[in-house]
Length: 633
Image (cartoon, rainbow, N blue to C red):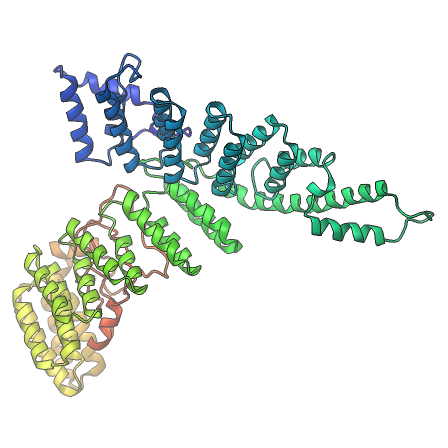
């Protein structure tokens, strides 16, 4: 999609051109109703398609001057329905909030338009541009109530006043107070602004210095600070040669100089803050929302900028930057997860929950499963069991074959004490999944759940034998079976493992997978077996029967593409770790996302690696997680 979909003013500037192209491509004439239905059908089928929304908005706005007070009720209703639906899907499009408000102003008047602006600043409270437009609108159209306008500016100052690019807002606020000749208020505003790192920090300080010369001293410092400073001035030794006490005029002149020195120190701190951030700010090429992906340089700049602000230690400024970032990077799961991790360090439970709601409710589609799994874990950790269960169910309603969610939901129910329900959930998943690999992964979870709840070795062994016959294509299942037997005490463990190896050799498991499992088995024999003949026999089988054939087999090449280092342990991403690979905004997460097999431990220890629970890293390929990896689990 072209960049002109969103210029910095937030408007879809090429809407008219795009619509004309659409109309030229339509050879057969259509009635207004049929075109309307067609456009609605298009956005309903693909609500992510921004261009289709632009066509629909243009159609709703009408031709020949557009919708007006003389238009029919149906036309007005259409216009409102389209804007409401569009802004629900794309709430960060500040320019369209302004357009909607302009329409309402022309149709119903300023009060109705103000309602749209209110909805806009609620939906995107950190939009400097929208606050400036809203305040300007109130001044121009509802100017008889200075108190309410001043209250609106104060709300805007709380929402966006600390933004690095908020200078336009402050200039508008100062301009308003000057128009009312309220110069005390002007100085008070400047008093706030000179402390904020803004590109125009020097201009604001010059203006502050100009006004401070003529304003009363009690407007320059709080009363307690002014009294303390005045006492210091009056008690200070007199200049050499002066015998008379200082006059009030001399005291005031000295106070003004001292106050100027204090403010100059503030100026230098502000200048330092601006210079520290300038390099990051200058690299932000698109601070507004756009459905087009950002390039890697832009994403990396946001990462470095966030790291800088976190290290500065000012939580308020870090939050402000995160909120700015999540406008430009709203479609990137990575930054939502990072913000959540940061808020957790602040122990802001309510803030974390609000971020989850925003991310999953409006910006990240159902295919972004990782953040939803984090959300479920977060709610469980904070005792909101029903909320966590709802998250899991919602994911499975949209992605019923998502293996990782099925597994984690089952373990969630296990932790709630419902072992039978958890086992039934895994059984149901195995019955509905389309391939042995996914079924094999759930089978391992089912078997382990049985074993840890019963500690019955014989029945667990029987389950493994049954499951490997049912799902022989699952390397993960065979490896789990082998590790289970190797974890048994004494020589019996090696004896049973030898039987598993014989079964595996005769199975229909891919040659390259037999080779990988065989390497694991051979390593264990080298470490534990006392029979060199057995070691030599297995070594021969692994390398002669499977190794040579595995290298050039199609399955091996596919495996190498999906997992170039099968022996390298790859753990799940946790909530306290760095986020995994960054997907593009339009990339869909595979429905088959399985936790990577990790570790080299025995069977009893392996479950712990799976329960690295707080979040699931996004798949880095369409193949999803290598749940059958020879690296273990």
